[in-house]
Image (cartoon, one colour):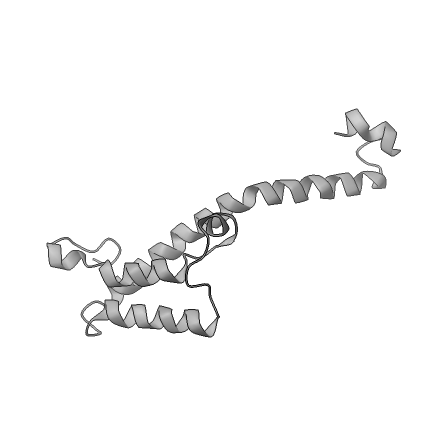
Length: 122
């Protein structure tokens, strides 16, 4: 970038303080482009954390899935979370799964009824 436009911008080389805005511009563009990937990575681990929570409380709390769903619903109400967010917004900006997905997961996750073991809690 500096080799192509640096002279026109009045930047002599990379060690010149005038190159700092160009560096910040590059970092901003890179950060913007990386946000969906980083958010997807975070959503994946947050979903695993929800699964771990259900596995830990299984057998300790009667109907742990229902309690979990009620807790996420209350969290969504308190935080004024969008109950049905646009999938594009979820892809671009959400670093946690949407509340509706978390509630649905809590209500449907039950490997024990199928004779399967838990994934995280052995």
